[in-house]
Image (cartoon, rainbow, N blue to C red; front, side):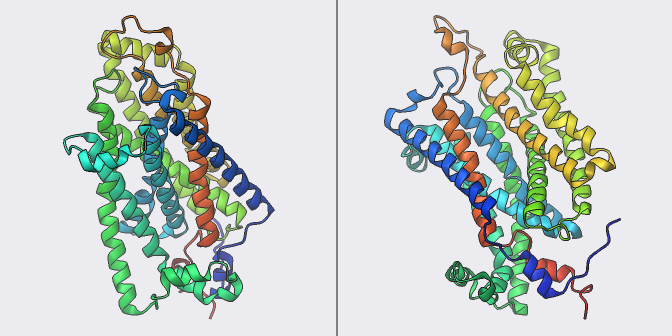
Length: 438
């Protein structure tokens, strides 16, 4: 058992206030900016020349962009998993994890929306969705729920930040003047009175209640984009639960990775403790087993029937062109993490970090496998189609934009943790109120 540390309010505040970037932080930020710049350059080329710069075509019209979109949507679920569910169920050890999960959710859903605009080819088509969109289309449902989820996630992050912003305004001498105007603009009205606190708590509770069904909707509607399209591998009523369970898993894996990184960089060992890794490890095992169940369900039923088109699709996954990636995603993304984390020693920080990275990487490849193999095996037979239509590998522009979007998500998180506390100061002080030395 870890010995619980007792710190003064001054010590807690000093430990958790945002810190300036050191040398490693500057190098990390510059690397992310460079990757984003390369991605932007590739996108400008795509705008100038059109989608011809990609390797998408008549059959694979959804490529790596849509895979990335599904990944971003999945990992964004972490905001409702940690903040909403843990708060409503009164999980007391959630405090160091909520801010991390909210930051991941906001950054991920931002780039989920942006990558869809990239996939459209021409950005003005987004405007046409609002002027000529049909509510009968699942694409319109996706636009609505993504916009709603983004607004709710952003508001949840902001309203939970208010007491910390007040603390940072009061600590302007220690923090310097760089962000003092931003803090005053965001939270100068917050005085921390009993009436304000009561309203804030009520608002957070309402948002947490609302965000859970919205989060389920965003993943279910995204799955419907596939399930309502008549293709092998997508013709499934299991897709809603399949997507939601996978989103819970990758979201939890993302939080574990972020916990370890922030714990190391900001020396938060006394706030993000082994207890948090142990508890998140148990959750990760449960979610991995749940997602593994839905994977078995997703492949067993069509494999038992073995219709011609499904046979080609499943053969390509299990023993064909996509087999190495498929087994990598299954083993690395689910099975190996289960064997690591199911044991108590595996729920220590470093093994948990390794398992979390495996889950996130495996999840990205799994999303790629959901999209690409299916597009290559349509129900309608291909007559007189060029050989290149039977294969798909992203162009360098697609890879650059994809990596640029992933770097952009990390850049948003990096900037936000430079401006705001990565662990809630106010909530930590409140949790330790009875233990603080008098």
